[in-house]
Image (cartoon, rainbow, N blue to C red):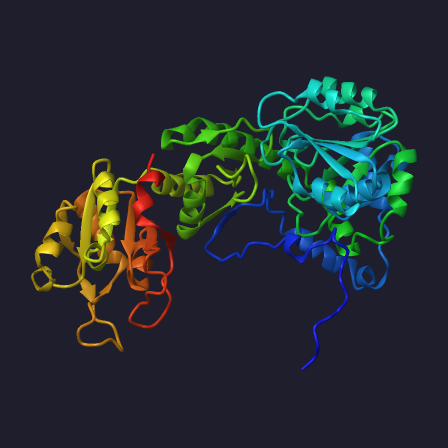
Length: 499
């Protein structure tokens, strides 16, 4: 057996800080990464036409830089193509930060600036910008003789707020010896694009990307726009062939023929963003005004539950459980598709504003006194029912069970089907179809279902209900031995998740 490694990384690098992409299932509506439109299918066909030489040779991005420059109306030497805007952020920090210097950054903002400043052993100075206008004066007041980089993310991720030209111009003038980084990754979705004026300022670099509106997040193509003197050191601060040739070729082609698709996508996102912002208060949530392709939603103490509940019904959104000031929020990407937008609304409605709560009778009969008290309070705000596939008359019905049953309006029999390899005393399997019929009979369109077996939770998922497993039964398995799935919660806290 080999001995553990004795090498130690620098304290500035921690394995726990590495970004880990959340798991994705085929049925998941993925609205957690702010990805843009789906690129045209013939973009891949174009790669085949280029032949194997595209893969054989080291990439040359000069043609792509010239095309971007032409679109923006700037000299080609003022555009530098990078491996996504992330690569450009790293190069900015690697080039213009060192020990003893500071970076000014709004709080909250895109996490990578703080990460790269830490790796450069520079100090991070945060300026609060939770919502509303850009805090220009606060930024100006925070400038010191150690300020080497000022980062303005506009539209800001994750809040969606945006700075004005006057904001950028004023801050740039206040730090003539420092670098002002204007992160414009989401600018296609914003009302104002500051690139045309900001690039001429001698200490400003604008970062943009094809990962968002242009739909090429998988290709990792971004670019920096600035005076050539600023870009020179950045070109030297990383690998020479950062962008793969196939990625550069697809970006070049999409910029050539994809503007119509991108414009349609942006128009759809703006419509959805306005509709979502106007609608989401109806389910008891607080939307932040946004200029991005996403909306940050204030959820109060319900944020963690809603994140898990949405995932359980097939919708992934971004949560920030370990980020102070954001731990009560969820960031929701607008899907850019009417069918998926309706699916998002329905999912959020069932998770945030249920019409009824159904409990597996076995769960009801095993409630602790504290959970019983909590559910009694829930029952004052929401209809409660017990469900079972067993014969109701055959269920246990002693004094304790009768007291528990008094918590619910009625015990409802849900027809079940016999399952293979089940013991004789096991209840029939609950099916989604039978549960749907039961909900229709009770007049409940949006339901939460609390179960202790995977069959019940799967039936709930199959009808678009929120499947909830009791945290007091974390190891309870279905008769087949499979672990329980679904949102796990302490039933004594259930009332906190209601509007």
